[in-house]
Length: 230
Ligand SMILES: NC(=O)c1ccc[n+]([C@@H]2O[C@H](COP(=O)([O-])OP(=O)(O)OC[C@H]3O[C@@H](n4cnc5c(N)ncnc54)[C@H](OP(=O)(O)O)[C@@H]3O)[C@@H](O)[C@H]2O)c1
Image (cartoon, rainbow, N blue to C red; front, side):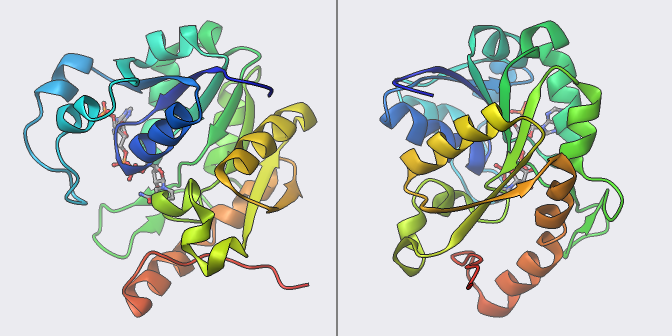
């Protein structure tokens, strides 16, 4: 990816906001996708992380626009998925396969199920992953699983942990898509980017999440990452 791009970011939570704001700061044209823009803008409560209502955030980021998943996808050259795990495929279905075909999707979502409380468990693992489920559901989408091993702030500013001396991963079937993902990651400041292989390797980074949530509880901070020490 050279220069600036039209990017559709699915998700109005911490990740969608943080990644969307960073991409806009880098000069890209960013549209955030949501199920129902009017309903999202009408929210007045903070979310479960204490983030302000989306309307307040959007007013502070006037270059970013809010549209439906389908509108955000239709206009985009590059897509980012930052929906809750169980919302990923429904969001992409709402976007419509025709609006996704041939496009690169950076998939940041994790298949965390909080229905039995904290800590969450994985809704898919071992022999499958959410990254693979998305790729199977939309064969013409070029899915790259990445950034799902760090908290939102670190995704776009790796220097927040260990001065940036740590590792991020890409998993996907399409070499060109992983090249695009790598360019985006480098523009965020990542230097140690490990290509794990095809989309089945997303099982590895998604299955790190049960450790991630326990590390967060034990260290009382989400500001940590994996460093692969060779
Ligand atoms: N938070 C982090 O630091 C972090 C770090 C690494 C990975 N992740 C992963 O990144 C993803 C986003 O996390 P987050 O904390 O930013 O937000 P989140 O609260 O997990 O997800 C919010 C988004 O999910 C959408 N959504 C919820 N239910 C849906 C459904 N049934 N169908 C379609 N969309 C639905 C919401 O749509 P509306 O806009 O319409 O409400 C909203 O845009 C998650 O998969 C999470 O596991 C998060």
